[in-house]
Image (cartoon, rainbow, N blue to C red):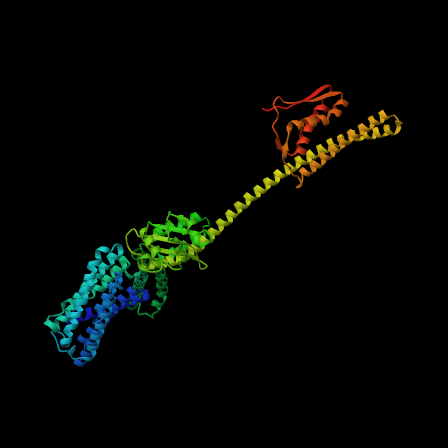
Length: 630
C-alpha cells in the first residue's frame, strides 16, 4: 500500500534523478554555452536539494538528518541565483545586471557559510507529521528565505518586463521556462512551511513537473539545442524496452512451456527465436528512428540530410544552379524564406563586393567586412563587437545569421539567413548544420568558380583566336593584292624600260655613224636626253613604290602654286607629245587657283601619270588640261 510518506519519498527521488539527467545532458550538449551551463547548474542544484530531502526523510538518526539538511541547502541556496543568472543571460541583460549578479552570488556564499557553521541557520532535525526527521531553524534561516523569495520574484519580474519584446521560439521558450519556474519554486517553497508555519509541504509532489515542462520546451521549441541527445535517448529507450520485452518473453515461454532455458527444445527453438528477433529488430529500429526524426527534427534526419546534400553539391558544377540548390535546401531545412548568397569573384577581396555575384539581390555598404569573417556571425550576439557597422546594416535587412564560405582559409563568399518562418530562433543544431554544410558548399562553389573562370578563359581565347585568324586572313588578302600589284607594276615598268633603252641605244648607234652633221648630232643627242629623263622617271617610280611598301615612306607637305605646277607638268611633256604628233596645252582657269598643301614629288607623279596616259593613248588630235574651282 502506498502511503503519504512513501509517495513523498518516491516523488522526491524522481525529482532528483530527472533533474540530474536533465542537468548533465544540457551541459554536455554545449558546455561552451553559458545558457546551457547555467540551466544545467539550476538542474544539478535541484538534484542536490531533492536528493538531500530524500535522505533526510529516510535517515536513521537526527545527526544523519542534520548532515543531509546541510547537503540539501548546499543545493537549495544556489537554485534561485542560478535561475536569476540564467534569465539574465537568456534575455541578453547579463552585462547590464552584472553588479546585481555578483552581489547575489556573494550573498549566496554567505548563506552557504552559515549553513555549515552556524546553529542559527539549522538547529536540529525534529520529527514532523509522518516524517521521523525534518528541520528546526534559527533567525539567519529567515533571512535566507527572504533572499530566496526576492531572487525568485526578481526573476519573474524580469521575464514579464521583457516578454512583449521577444518573438518566435524565444518567446515560447521563456514561457515554458517561466511555467517550469513557477511550478518548481512554488512546489519547492512549500518545504519552508513545516519549519516556519507547521504546514505539510504538499506542493513537493509537483516539483518534478518542472523537468517535464522543460523537456517539452526542449523537444517542441528546441530550447538549449539538445534535440540530438533527446532523439538518441528516445531511440535508446525504445530499443532497450524492445530487448527487455523480447528477452523476458522468450524466458517466460521456455520456462513455462519448453522445460527451461537450457532444455533441448529451448536450444532448438532458440535458433528460430534468434531469426525472428533479427527479422523484427531492424524494422523496429528503423521505425523508431523515423518516429524520432518526425518528433525531434520534423521528419529530417540530420545525418542523412548532410550526406545527401554533400553528394548533391559535389555533383553540380554550374555556379547559378549550385547556388539555387543551396538556397532551396537551406529554405527547406532551416525553415526560412530569406536566404541570400554573396560570392566574391574578384581576387582582390577588398574590391570583391562591388563586383560580387549576389543571389536574391542583397547589397551592403559595409559588405567588405564579410571578407574578414572566419566564423559564423550571429547578429543577436554580436551587436557590440568589431563588426558593429556591418551588424547594424544586416539587422536592417532582417538578417539573423551570416555563415562565411571559407575554402583553404580564404573567404570566397557568405550565406545570409533571415528570420525563420516560425519566427523562432536558430538552434545549436542549425549552427552545426551551417558549419558542416558551409565548408562543403564553399568547396563546391570554389570548384564552380574555377570552372566558370576556365570557361570564360576558353571563350576569350576562342574570341582572340578568331580575331587573330581574321586579322591574318585580312593581312594575307592584302599581301596577295600587294604582290599582284607589284607583279603588274614590274610588268609595266619592264615594258616602259625597254622602249627608252631601245631608243637611247638606237640614237647612240646613229650618232656614232652619223658623221660630222651637226643637225643630226643635235637631233640624236636630244632624243638621248629625252629618253634618259624618261628612264629617270621610271626609276623614280620604282623607288617610290619601294618606299611606299617600307617604313621609309614619308610625305613632306609644302605650299604649292597649282597654276604654275600644272603649267610646268604640261611643258615637260611637250616634246613627248610632238614626237607622237599630238598638240598638248594647258588652259589656265578664269579665276586663279589658290595654293594647296601637298608633297610636290608624289603629286607630280600622280598628275603627270594622268597626262602621260592621255598622250600615250591619244592616237591623233590634241591633249588639253584644264583646272577650275568647283
